Image 1 (cartoon, rainbow, N blue to C red):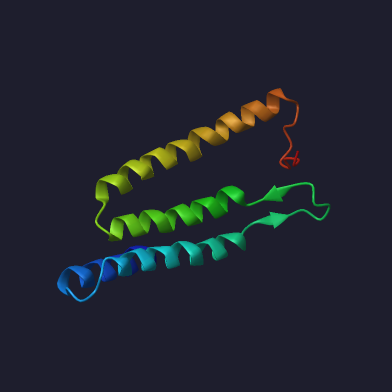
Image 2: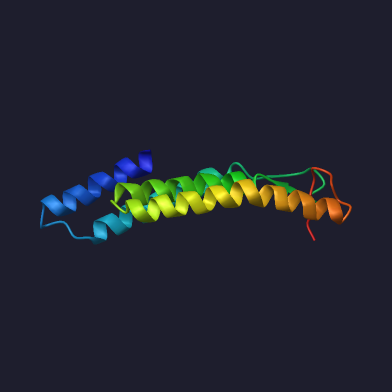
Length: 115
């Protein structure tokens, strides 16, 4: 929601004021994506022995939520809707596929070993 509001405010300011350039929108979106990247990095955890990592999907989902918010705030509603449907499909179906693959390989534990 914050990314959508920030992007919409800058987009509307650019449309209302000819002095502002479209580069302003680009800079705001870049800053949002960078900031959310740092927040997502805090979600990623490595186990004590350093052999597995947890939280990558969560971090990527947080980053993507900010990207979808920016797209929505910029008025790209069709792109936002299509990306949302595609990502939800990947998150729902991809998890089930991943679990089946690891189960077939004999590694059905919660910890995935880094190769």
